[in-house]
Image (cartoon, rainbow, N blue to C red):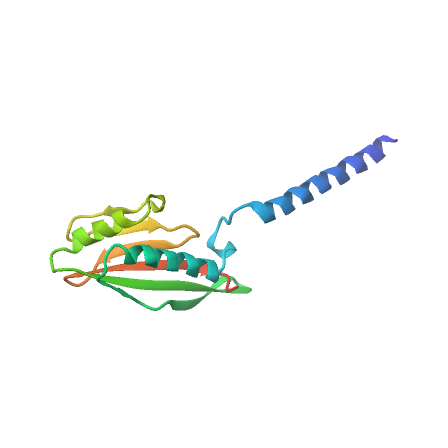
Length: 154
């Protein structure tokens, strides 16, 4: 074989290797941005979190899903989900309730609270790019919001 022929063989072999790695990566790597997951996956995660939060306190009002249209790119439409859960307690016990909500979540969510008793807030990551945010609301109320971010509809 000539030098030029070896070059063509090498380039073709490299292209086959890159194509093989791309197919493997597409099939086996986890998503790296919310747009690589579906609304159904987000809803399943949010339903799981809702069940886990229901176990923290029986005094909970679960809101319906709010859907909001969004753009993943200029050419691709998406959908964002949001759900609010309202916990009730005796006035003055809101901070303790929010701390118990954070403590009642699985350790893998890395739930954390910040602020003083008057301005306490909570943040956790439920996985599949679903966030959990908690805040003090009216006296005797704590609101926890689950949000999915923009993702593909199907």
